[in-house]
Image (tube, rainbow, N blue to C red; front, side):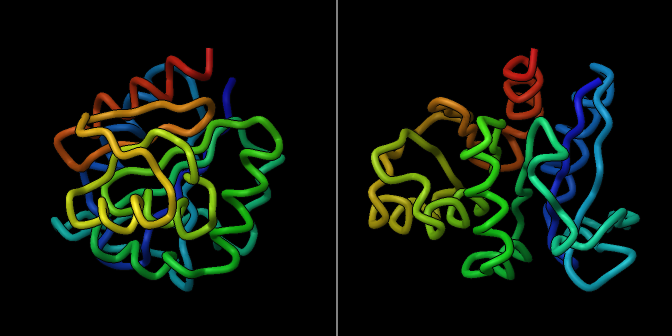
Length: 168
């Protein structure tokens, strides 16, 4: 069984970007843990309330096969967050799958992980990714090595399927 952690904002994560990949991954037999910062119950921008299993400060990349950063406007709390950057760096250093969707690829870009890498993101994030050296592709989902990025809510299911397929 694959262990996956999905990191969401305490408020205003994008519901579909959590729920759709989570469903795809759980349907394939994976165990999904939800991490966030400073809350036991996270609130989505579309009305979802999600129980948080652990604080982002407790996430150890070594315990997971994949780490996924969920987008939505609330994800800005992680853009320059040292803990989030450290988790992302550890994930790649250990050869694990690192995912980010919507605005969350900017977290990876700000951590210095997208320089010279192909990626996609929500249109509002393209200039940030480009300025950090990413090769931005106008696709719903882009994979470059162990990094998988998704464009936004419309790509949520495909993003989840690409992560699932990469974990086989």
